[in-house]
Every structure is written in C-alpha cells, then in structure tokens.
Amino acid sequence: MAGGFRALADRMDALAVERLGDPATLADGRRVFGAFASPFIGAEIGGSKSGAARLGGAINADEVLEPTLTARVVDVQGVKKGDHLTIELPPLLGGGRYKVVRQKPDGSGMVDLVLSVSNERTDDIT
Image 1: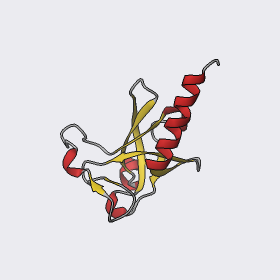
Image 2: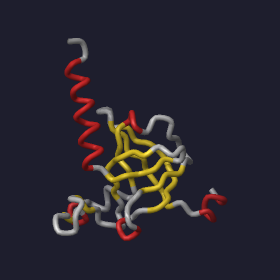
Image 3: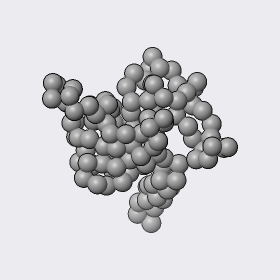
Image 4: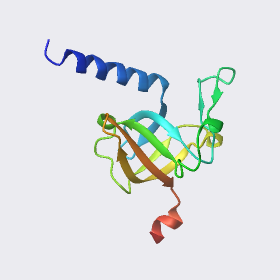
C-alpha cells in the first residue's frame, strides 16, 4: 500500500486539527482550523465553559511576543505576508481581524502564521 502510513497520518492530523482547533477565516473565504495563541489573552481549550482549561499560565510571554495561528501547511497554502484573516473566537478570547506578518514553518507540516492586530490606520503607515 503505497503512501498508506502518510495518508493515514494526514487524515488523523486533519481530523484532530478540525475537532480541536480554533476556527479562522482566510481572506479568500476559506475556513481553517489551528491553534491561536496571543501573549495578551490566555487561550482556552475544551470548548465548553465548564470543561475549558486556561493555558495563559503555561505560555511564556517572553517566547510568544506576537499573536500566532499555528495551522497545517496544506490548509493555508496561498496565504502570504500582508493578507488578513479573522480568528473566529469571541473578542475576549482574542477573536477578530489580524494581518499576517510572516510565516514560520516548523518542518513537520505545520506553520506559525505570525499576526498583528489589523488596524486600518497602522496598515496605511507600514
């Protein structure tokens, strides 16, 4: 069975990211899922208020200086610096519109989309 292991691993990754990830909408309208982290907002996992676990204490803000969305490379193909995306979370959890500052692939099929707050005034300046 050619590519059996890789194909199975890809399907498992896609399912895990879709079920556990934070939803985001790319500029072209595609919906993707990933792990959103912000040094200013403690991320939550678990989905429900009663089962959610705070991650803010586990994140070292010195290492995470900018908001990021970690997603599968295959899900964010075509995204480039300057593109906008919307994190589909409540504003208190950091949801909103962001601009892609740069990409940091990790070599394992995942990429950190490093983000900045999308502010029309600063967009004109940079």
